[in-house]
Amino acid sequence: MTIKFGCHTSTWVLDYDKEVDCIDQIIDTVSDAGFEGVDVQVALLGKYKHDPQRLKERLDSKGIELAALTVPFTWLSDKESEEEKARADFYIEYVKHFPNAKLNVPSRVGPNRDNLLKRQKEIISCANALGKRAYENGVVASFHPASPATSYFRTESDYNVLFEELDRRYIGYTPDAGHITAGGMNAAEIIRQNLPIIKHVHFKDCSNNLSWRKMGEGDIDFPTIVRDLVDYGYDGWIMVEEETPETAVDPDKVIYNVYKYVEKI
Image (tube, rainbow, N blue to C red; front, side, top):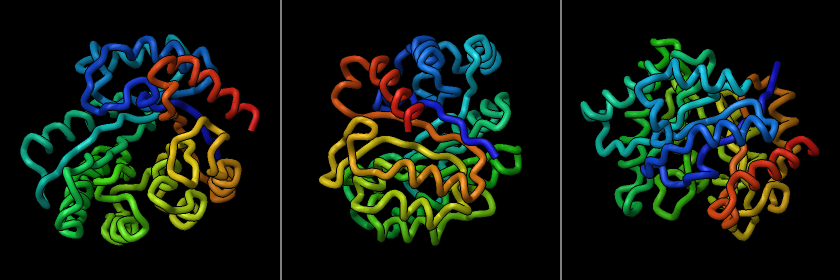
């Protein structure tokens, strides 16, 4: 059983749709800081978008792995559009070039939470279909809820729907400790209750008054979460990220400090 620690590229660029060709800088920083891998939101693939082998060579040169690709979707009905299906299948094929890398799948934040249960079931229906195709191609897909005010999966009742509808045969769950806390829940409890379906993990710190904090300065009990994962036999990645204002000023420094926290704690 091995847990590896890496970074999510959202620390550098939080917007899933903002295309910035900065992945080489991110790879250098992640490696030099001491982390073992990176989870890349696909808008940041840049020159590597159509060349997974070249990306693998770049990662290998720095001694780190691709832990996951993060691929967001809107899913406006209970079936994927042809465009969404093609997008998913493109990245399923892409991630197959990287042994054991996951397909991390967040649903995009909506304009509001109208028709909430209907929207939740539509989203999970599409996520399940994507997960089944990934499974059939030897790729592990994992669903990632978030906590913005108009997210479809942010509170405890939302999570109850998620865990009821998720097809556990084909798709897993990516808990994000920061988003769980920002949704008014206890991250350690949510993770402990759902250990069997966890395929990928995101860490960032948050206070109980729902504001982002530097790692170790919020109210999330990360050591307990890691112990629970270890005791269960979780064999995968913990990706650490940060959403404090400092990330917009000096994300590289933030990542070096985050690694110091991980190494110490």
